[in-house]
Image (tube, rainbow, N blue to C red; front, side, top):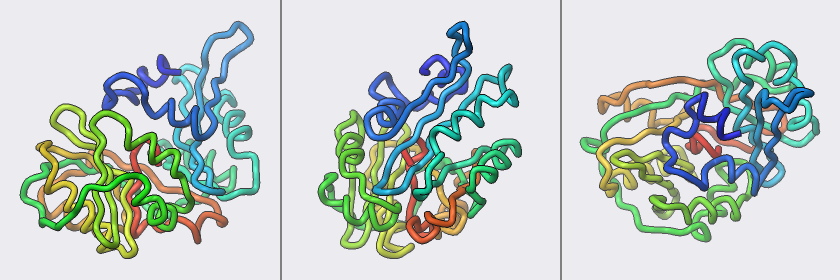
Amino acid sequence: MRKIATRFGLLSTWCGTPDFLDAERFFGRLLLASDDAGAELGFGGTLRRGSLTHLGDLFVLPERQSSGVGRALLTDLLGHDEPRMTFASSDPRAVALYVRHGLFPWTPLLYLKGPTAGLPKREVRPAGADDITALDAEASGGARHATLAWYAGLPGVAIYATDGGYAALRRTDDEVTVGPAGGNTPQECANAVLGALAVSPARNARIAVPGTHPLVGILLAAGWRIADMDTLMGDDASRGLVHPDRYIPNPDIG
């Protein structure tokens, strides 16, 4: 699976293992598709937040796309009636595939990059997984203490909190990846992220922001740029659980 992930550039921000594939293996499901000769064709992975299933990965080798591999993986991974969501790539075929499995577009998911300096400053304090589990569950759609504790224990990860929000940062070289982050309100979530970035020693950051979140305007006004874009998709059951106006997912673990 890491061979396929490397081919798609999915591990470029991870320095060795453990990585997000381990998270899917530990806290969700990770499936490898292969042909009759045993050659790898693609893989899919999910993570759980309470009753919510987040499809984190669905990648099929380019030469085997449009052959039913992705459809077979999705049927196995999402073939149930519990709440489900994912980040669909800009490939129209991906969006159509997810719609056929009952997931519908909600809002753009903007991958922003920019400097940590020059942003509004907010006060935060160091925190741990125990401190943020309840708030994360309310904003993200379900409880996942074990996943948060695992992530908090990775090298370079730091968690910060305010009275009404939290933000996790993972540093790789001179860049930090933001998320997950959340808050009781959209502004509380934004304040936690801004405070975490203010105390980070890294000069640059990357973040996946739903289009309805107030951080979109704040970061773009500060000179950040949109590096890529996905579509946040979910089924009807997940719509009342996940709050994209006050939740910042982690790009790799949702």
